[in-house]
View (cartoon, rainbow, N blue to C red):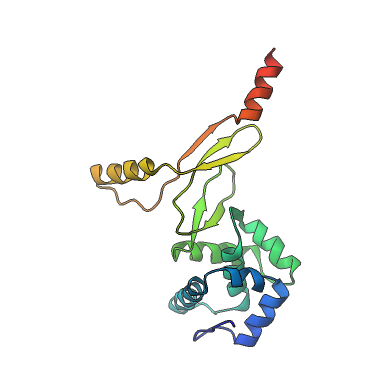
Length: 183
């Protein structure tokens, strides 16, 4: 059952939208408290900003939270349009920025011209090794990085909001291919 909050589209509209989007099953897997909290926070943020609580905005929220791994605005646009949701690229970008501000998503820099997003979870932060040849991404967690960034912030009296640690080079396969090409 999908809960609604004041200012949200009616429950029947949301239920219909989720059924058409075929993400209701994905959402059932998500923690229902997280989903309720996300919808409540979105409702309050929209009201505070004097924005309408549209079915499209809630569809973007639900799809973003149901998506595993990295995604970009274009991914959501394609998915939502293929499922019959009439939304614009601008609406998706604005909604994703708002979801990041509310703490449900994180921007992920992957050395591309466009921004990727990832939902925030209780899992430790992941940093990346990125192959400059094939684009392979190896994620890792090194707790010392968080400690170092915190220490730097304190030392320079800098309020940290986020950080992005990435190492660029060649993955094992590309390095082997490069070595083989040299011989």
